[in-house]
Length: 480
Ligand SMILES: Cc1cc2nc3c(=O)[nH]c(=O)nc-3n(C[C@H](O)[C@H](O)[C@H](O)COP(=O)(O)O)c2cc1C
Image 1 (cartoon, rainbow, N blue to C red):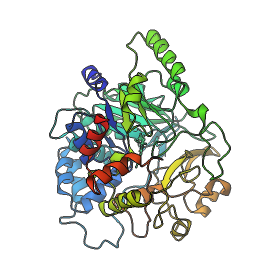
Image 2 (cartoon, rainbow, N blue to C red):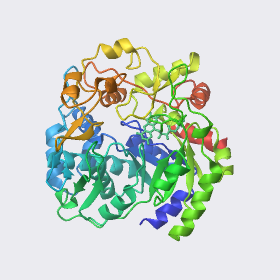
Image 3 (cartoon, helix red, strand yellow):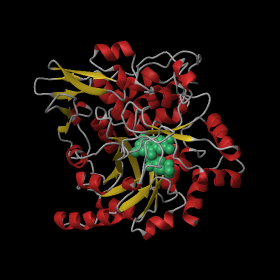
């Protein structure tokens, strides 16, 4: 375990939230880490992001990719995807990446096709490698637990690049401490798989499928992203916690109250707030039981102007997303980002907590903007296809495992035993989020997520007369 790294991270007041897809890119993470805070890259769907950057002629990505220890694989990927000077016809779709067709054996082991598994590992390796260049400070990776199938290949790619911290939420990441222990020893590793109506399935990952002579790896600390003390109990072997409330950007935990508000949003109330006393009790109990120091924690979800409050509640600091998401360095396509900032400065943007949009089943915050997926007309004019498949769920039907996504074509969903009522209001986040970062397929409208509050974004934008940098965010937060 990178014990020294854990103690280094303990002193960090500001964690830059991992924001997928591609919003927390290496540029943002590198900048934040260089400035002595914790920069975090998003590991979500990186095989798409990296291969699309290569097709746009990204030389920096190509060079970092070629640092991968298996040169044959690195050359294969660059040969397949890199286009010198960038692709000429922007109206054509990008060259595809294998769809996640999973392989399942009689022992109920689920594996990925080797080409996809390798592509995920090398892509994550590349992004972490880039984020770590030019400074000696720690860099983290963020992944969504809901996305189980790419998990171990992603983590392994990150370990090969020497990632210093792993941050995972969106589900209760119970298996991750054990998975990290095992992967960092280069052992064949299994991870319990969620398969609807099925039992005893597991993902299986063999590091030697990626590299025959892997280097010695170090086990990074694991920071579990949770929404309260009950969730903390479920991941008691995490090395640290990020406690995120319902105002944060991206996905949120479900509200206790199942009724929606008048506006149709989840009705988050007092019961969804952190019970600080119960959380602290759990931490001291857990510390005694494990014979280890009390786990440090950070608060997230509209905390950019509340560092002092977090510190006085015993946190080491805060994790911040939205102000970084709209900073110059983030992956959001620059012209759109500038428009969004202007709109926030002039009239404001409503952020709707959509209880249905995400195929993951979790509430998802969506900025309400005319030319995006948040506009019903725009979304309905989109041809319904499923060609990325990151958010697929697994089900067992008649002894066979099938995958489906409630945003896929209705005919396919129904044929695979899905109920139409479960598709209502669902959006194709996979394609929408690729468009958000400027790497979308033709005719795929973007979708923008952010936290409920744009207070700090507005203040920074006013001070800077528009777009601001990640350094501006850090200076603002630390000086308040
Ligand atoms: C654009 C965007 C994308 C996000 N994507 C993820 C993600 O992929 N994984 C994750 O754990 N959190 C994600 N988040 C949450 C952030 O990491 C962070 O915890 C949260 O935004 C904090 O609240 P704030 O936005 O009010 O500062 C996302 C947030 C934003 C704004």
